[in-house]
Length: 558
Ligand SMILES: [Zn+2]
Image (cartoon, rainbow, N blue to C red; front, side):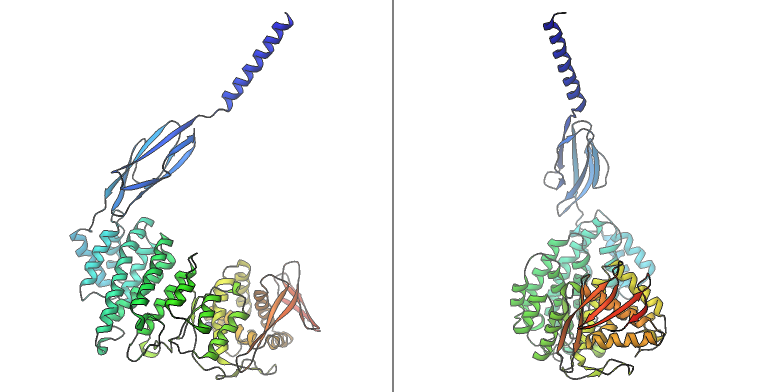
């Protein structure tokens, strides 16, 4: 063989190998084409495209308002709105939509009306089952529900009672499918807005004597606001509707400043309006907290917030709903508390003072809130008390401040502790270890068993002492430890750990009788498990020997 021939064979082989290698790694791509019938009735996501052979594509059919998805055709079949297509050839699929029924049908409407009438007087199992069977219909779009509920509530005998609101939250937010939730929510949204607008007018025109807690206007108005609150937190198609809710409340405030604005309300002349206002403001504050948009300045303007109140809203995102009852001193105290408690520990966004809103005593309406608290309106410098038992020196502190601090610490419990598995577990362990004996708690001014019955008070209750005087609280823990009761000291270290935010120091506080709150950084040392084993209070170093759970077994005094 000549050299040239040999070279030719080698080149030929190399080319062949390259071709084989290319064929072996080459994956064909296929085209997915998607169409919609009738055109414009909806859209499919993704809208088709090029895919590698074998790739699985998840397609979802989305109807526009007024249509519902019916079935897939072409190289796909079935009725679920989401399907998966395997791309093993070019594919074309069609999403078929049908006009959504604009009413639920007269038989169904009659039946559902009967069920809801029954439920509006209380939870009735057969009626709940009956209503469920109709409300769970996936093919009924928002228009159908809007016209049904419009019809239902236009009957003067039908009110949006507490019981009806309670029931409707289940099909609208929790039971059945996301499609059902979206349709019911959209259908109810515009209706609730109509109810609030029309019933606000009816309220203003109504004779005061007819405005009782159970009266249709009061019930329908209050429960419509409460239902919108639930929509803010649980709705499926979230952000757009939340913006609509904010937009709605902005207009409601502008159109009805006497009820929903921030001007002082005459609570005797306008019974229950304080509760309507409070619920509207809570809704607005909680919807704002969940949006990315910075609307705070605009809302502050609409509410005509000024001075300290405006600072508190803009700097801490906390709306004060007090019917202008809080005086400057009280507002300063609230601001200094929000300054002193690290904002990453809580998610508070509203503070109501029910007593100033006329929403207390026998005429009280229950407010729905998720991240707000209520405080008392006592003047600063009153309700001065010593929060400590006589085992340690007394320390007097202001009552208004203590209540605000206690309530804020409910949010620390519900946000920072709840959001941290280690803290949550430790809190449960501490409650279990302390059991029913009141002397096993820092707060022993309660009855035996109190914290077992109301565990939600356990953490917030410690704050009354910790913020009055953290050092006294530590002394009380050590005193009890020496009496053979280690739990109060464990509780103290837990509170200090929460306030350390995982860092190398914690915060100690003192509160005087004039509401002055002072904060000190206290360096800490942790063991390998992260438990606090030393506190450096000025020049005094306290040491703790712990077991593996973090329970104190011995104390080293300075
Ligand atoms: Zn409490």
